Amino acid sequence: MARNDFILIVDDDPEIRDLLQLFLVRHGYRVKAVPDGSFLESALEPPNLPPDLIILDLMLPGGDGLSWCQWLRKRSRIPVLMLTARGAETDRIAGLETGADDYLAKPFHPEELLARIRSVLRRTRSFPDRLDSESIREFRFGDWRLLTGSRELIDPQNVRIALSGAEYRLLRIFLERPQTVIQREVLTEMLWSRSPQPTDRSVDIQVSRLRHRLHDDGREPSLIRTVRGEGYLFALAAQPAR
Amino acid sequence: MARNDFILIVDDDPEIRDLLQLFLVRHGYRVKAVPDGSFLESALEPPNLPPDLIILDLMLPGGDGLSWCQWLRKRSRIPVLMLTARGAETDRIAGLETGADDYLAKPFHPEELLARIRSVLRRTRSFPDRLDSESIREFRFGDWRLLTGSRELIDPQNVRIALSGAEYRLLRIFLERPQTVIQREVLTEMLWSRSPQPTDRSVDIQVSRLRHRLHDDGREPSLIRTVRGEGYLFALAAQPAR
DNA sequence: TGTCAGCGTTACAATTCGTTACAGAATGCG
DNA sequence: CGCATTCTGTAACGAATTGTAACGCTGACA
Image 1 (cartoon, rainbow over the protein chains, first blue to last red):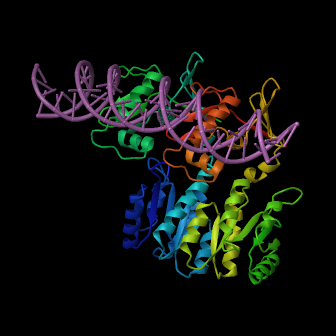
Image 2: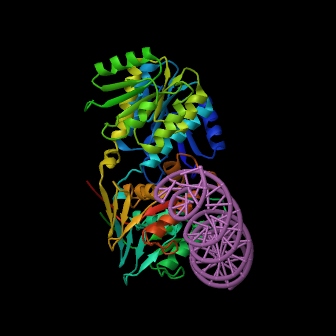
Image 3: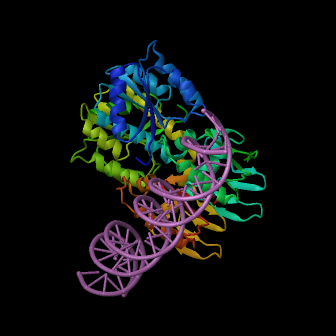
C-alpha cells in the first residue's frame, strides 16, 4: 500500500461498518463509514476529497445499493466493491452488470476483503484514468507556465525550473482553484492524505518553498497570499490549456 | 457482446470443459478447451491468435494453476478468470495476489460465469489502447525511436542501442503511459510480478540503467523524472506507430 | 499599547533516491 | 562443455528533498 488510500464504506449495518473500519484502519487505510448513499453525492464534489475505493452494500434500505452503483458509474470511475448476501447470485450478477468492479459475499473473511481491495486498487493504478483535470496540458498564470505532462515550471524569462513533488502538487492545487481561499486543513489533506495536528507547520514550509521557486516574498506576496486564520489564496487568474 | 471473443478454457475435468464450452459457444463465444497449461505457451505466439480471456482452473494436476497464472502475468495482459474450489479462501487470495482478474468458485451458476466474463471483458475493453499495444511496431519520443519487433532503441543520431530485457520492459511501460506518474509499487508489479519489500531498490536501479541508455541525468533529468515518495514520470509525449 | 497567536523563514536531522561496485546467475559462442 | 560476456540483485555512499524545531515578525484583539 503506497499511500493512505481513502476508502468509503456504505453499509446500513453498524456492526459491519465498525468492524470494517477498524480492520481497514489497522491496515493503514483512511476510512469513512456511512449508513446510506446520501453521502456519495457530496463525496464527489470539491472541497471533499474523492475516495480511492467505495465499499457499497447492495442491500441498503430500500434496495438502494444497485441504483447508487449505477449513479456512481455515470459520474465517476472510482472503483466499487459491492457487498452482497451469501447465495444471492442474481444480486451479484446485477451488481456486475451495473459496473461494480468486484463483489464479496457476506459473511466474508477479512483477509479476502483485503486481497480484493488491493487487487481492485492495483488494477485501477495500472491504468491511471485521465480525468478532465489530468488532460490539461498546461496552466498559464501571469507570465509563468506549468507544464503538467513533464511537471516543469517555466518562468517569465522562459527558464525551466524543476519542482519537487510536493511543490508541484501544491502549485497544482492552487492553479486548479485560483483566487479562492483554500483552508490549511484542506491543503494538508490534499498534499499528504492526513489530517493536520494542531501545531502542524508543514503547509507553511511548503508554501514558503513554493514562494521561493516563484520568486514571491512571503512578507509582501504577489502570488500566494496568506489569509490569517484560514489558509492561502492564489492571487492570479490561471488559464488551463489542453 | 460486441464481437466473437475467443475464450480459452484450461481445466483437467473433461465434464467441466465440455459443459463450459457448450454453454459459452451457445452464447456466441469462440472457445477452445484444453486439459492443462502446456497449450498456453504456444497460445501467446504467432501465428496463433491470443485469446481474449483465459479461464484457468486453479487445481490443475500438480497444483499448476497458480504458477501458470504467474507465468501468464509476466508475458501477457490477457485477463484471467480463475476457477477455485468452494471455500478455498486461501486459494482465492493467492490467485488474486498473483494477478488473476477474477475468480469463481465451483460449482457455479452458469449465468454468474457469464456475467463475470462480461464484466472482465468490459473492464479490459475500457482500455482498448492497452490491448492493441501488442501490434504497435514502433514508439517515437523526441528524436528517439523504439522498435518493438527487434526490441532496439534508435537514438537521435540513428545509432542502434541494445536494451536488456528489464530495460526494454521498463521503457515500454513508460511509452505506454507517457506523462503520467507511475507508482514505484506498480512498476515493481509490472516488471517482476511481485510486490516490493519496504527497502526494495530494484526499480531505482533499473530506472538508473535506463536513464544511462537514454543519456538522461538522474540529477537533472529530461526524460525520466522522479516524483519523490510516489514514483516516476516519463516527461515526453510518445507516439505509437503501427 | 501590550500581548499573544499565527505565520515566514532558516537550519539541521531524517528520509528517499541516484549511482557505482561487486558477486552470482544467465546467456551466448566456440 | 567451458569460457566470456551480459544481466541482475545487493550493498554502500553521497546528494537532494522533506520534516522538525526554533527564532523573529506581523496582525488581531483586549
